[in-house]
Length: 113
Image (tube, rainbow, N blue to C red; front, side, top):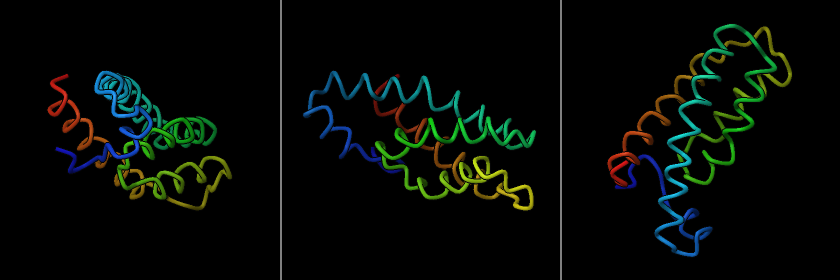
């Protein structure tokens, strides 16, 4: 439990209410994989605006669950925001996706979702 994500901030936000913590975990599982797919497609298609929007939307959740890739996600976000056409963010995106995939699997298992 909590190898690829941390619940410290989630517990703090939820005031240790287990039901609310589970609701936040469910929201993570509903939204983050969908946003990750959006981000992956946007980077692949060099859709800078969409990449920026997807990464920007993901930031608070990635930070709240402490996935350890917030700075890397911000690099991808800034690639989109500033249309850094000369920069390849594939490796940064791969790091973010890997962290999210591991967290999703672990949260599903830990919360039996």
